[in-house]
Image 1 (tube, rainbow, N blue to C red):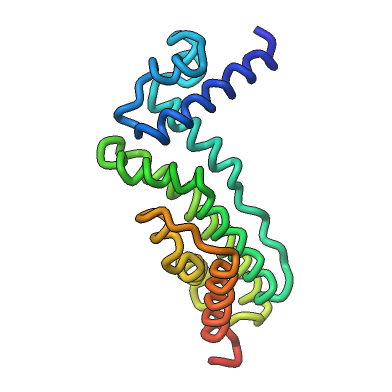
Image 2 (cartoon, rainbow, N blue to C red):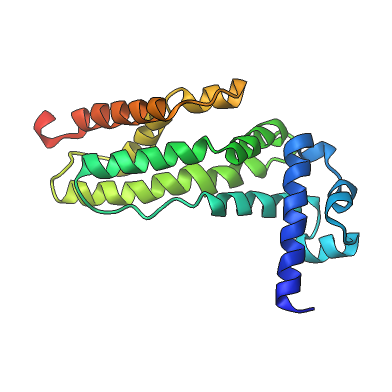
Amino acid sequence: MPEDTRSHRRQKMLRAARICFLDRGFLRTTISDVLALSGGSRATVYEEFGDKEGLFAALVASVLDDMSFPAIADGPPAEVLRALGRNYLEQLLDPDALAIYRVVLGESVHVRQLGPAIFRAGPQAASDALAERFAGWAARGELALENPRRAATLFLAMVEGDLHRAAIMWDRSPSTEEIEDTVDAAVTLFLGGASPAAR
């Protein structure tokens, strides 16, 4: 089968899987549900994804690819952290990302590898990337940080504030102004404690 035909078939199945999994959850979705929307055969699903868990993992991977954390530019910490914070929070609040997160919360008790996989690909990857930038700033004396990795985790938690929880729990969509205010407050508070002058 030509590669472009196979790629088209795969994308069609992933689109159908997104609709089914986000609407019904992991446990209540069947391969038959996905095939009813996408066409094709069970043999095709097994060839492309292995099984239902493989199909869901591929869906999660595609959503995370769409949300890929950008390379963190070098520059003044305040400027870089504001841009990074807005991007991170906007991606967390993306409707597809929120829907996936809800499915993972609901199903991780039954499919135990889902939670750790999502955490490694999302928050942990972001924290690891930020920790490297923090280490660079600390080495140049621009920030006073004893533990850049811990600082990165805490900064991202500050950026999330209560906006992400509110969006997960009752589907509340914050305004652009709320996102910017939350990020600005997190950056100001973080740099107030991490500034060399504060030590």
